[in-house]
Length: 432
Length: 114
Image 1 (tube, chains in turn blue, orange):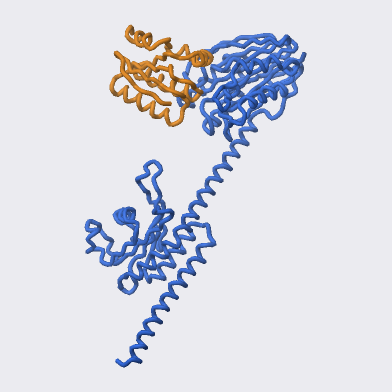
Image 2: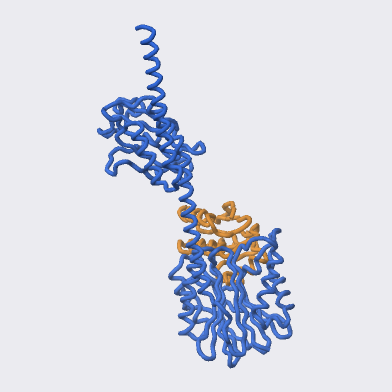
């Protein structure tokens, strides 16, 4: 071979190498363009697989996504798999998955049956060769890109392995970003659902103070979470009688909110049939008991006011005793004993009654008020509440103003601490 | 809800520290009670002396435990509730459900005389 021939061969080899490099770069460029503009995991994964197959000259390919098991961080679960063929018998078996999780590096197998590393693996007959590359994001294995069977009965070689590794490395973060984006979307969806639930729940509470002859009545509920477990309600039963109630369902969030709407339906139904508060509570207790777990219960105060005789009959299911503020600014508590609703199937409740005099005001509240805490974990407490009620003066007969002043006193106490529990109050005042 | 479990005479004493307020703790407590039932240890005392907070979910845990023990022929007695917890039990009328005692000794004696 003369000099010229030698030079020619060298240049030819160099050209070949450069052409291959240009080819690889164009594959990677094409892949980058295909996946960078998308946030759709499925589309991205399909683009990676199809381009890998073309680049490596393989028959099939798939990506197995793995995710850490939240309950058991040492375990990973196969989350999903996208493959070129739905009916493909070729997919990553558990042994390969395990190997990739431990080694986190490319794996090339050209003679599966004779591979020492996987001696006990039963290979599908159609697998002649395979090549895996890890998808790593922040040093974590998030998936495995695999291609199967080099076309034309060939073998995968080191340059295939190198190219597939580059493809995997270039794609991993995009795949991870798309997954995070989808998680975020799912979270937003849940949040919208919660907002919807919160809106529905707020509509279930009375929306504005009612017209009530000789009386002023109003209530307010501030939820600590987007949906809450506190509840107040009032409704006319006939020309003379109104029902007022305020309750607190144990627990928080959606489960408490669902139970609350159940309780409201029960009470509204019962109040139209039964004339005494204690009987309404007895029946509501049975119904709530039968539809809840033993650890879920509700405390409730329920009163029925006759606006002609000004008699308030009331009963309580383990709820904080409400206050009666008299026109001379003295306080007394309305005590009626009874267990919270939903604990035992058969419970009896006590009825008591008082007469509301002109200028008397009834203040019913939930423990979210007395238990609102400041940063030193000191509660607002009954003393502060009583102080606020006594000093309300003429405002005691203006429900909105009285509730404003008590809530504001709570906020002043708790500073910028977030609400830890729902705050709810209801005021029924006889006009002076 | 942190607690230690000790045995005293024929009773198992749960000494609870800090807050009783539901959450995953409830599950742990339930499982511990179930273990006691399986071991035929059914006299349970809950010492509330070091509890500084209990909300409605916390009361729910105690009620759930109480009902489980009663259903299995056992009982839960409470002791050392401070003024606030006592008034909480009184307002919710649960003092009529739970046998409550001023001291651990008195709760243990109550089981002895059973």
